[in-house]
Image (cartoon, rainbow, N blue to C red; front, side):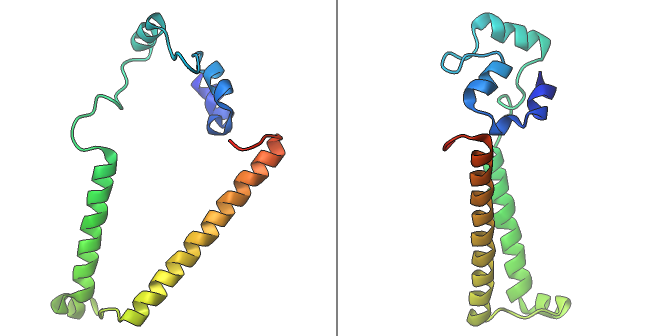
Length: 127
C-alpha cells in the first residue's frame, strides 16, 4: 500500500484518492476495528508518542544557537582576528538582505509556476 502511495506521488493526489489508497473515510477516518488492526499489523505511531520539545522548538533553538555563534564570530574582536573576519556595515547588511529577498522571491515564483503547470497538466483547479 505504501509503495503504491510513493509511486503515485500521493502528496499531489486529491484527498479522496489518498483516502481510497489508505482505505479510510475522508470525514470519519478509521473505524475502531481498523485502528486496532493497523496497530497490531503495523505498530503504534511513534510520531505521536514522542515526549519533550517538538520538532519546531528544536529547530528554532538550533537556528537561534547558530545565529548567536555566527554573530559572535562576526562581531567579537578576538574571533575576528582568529577567523580573519570583520563586522558587517549597515550597507553590507542591506546588500545581504536584498540578495536573500531576491532569492526568496525567485524560488516562490518558481514554486508557483510549477504548481500552476501541474494543475494545468492534471486538468484540475486549485488544490
